[in-house]
Image (cartoon, rainbow, N blue to C red; front, top):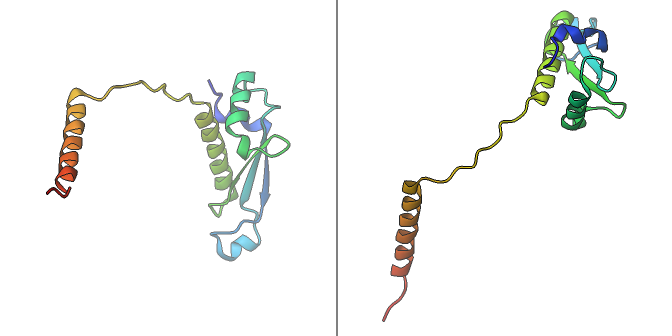
Length: 134
């Protein structure tokens, strides 16, 4: 079970910078882009099993130091971008730790098999009728 998003705050560092995108001239003078940094290996909230799973699933998103970096610059407000990036971070953790349902092997129904074989037979007859006979 994953702790609530607020529990991760002490383990997360935020960095702000000037963002591109919406905001007009306001963008040139305010730091509304928010970058979230989370060191997976140093987390006290995650179990070793969870860390291992996250390391495997999030490997392409981790830096060489093992940092998970997420960025939000969708909004003009730094506070809303911070909330956005925190929400994305938590959803990413939840998605990565979710176990996929095991696939149940199924057989095609008798009707489906019969229909497929009839279609194959009709196609074969159609092709046989194309042959030149003397």
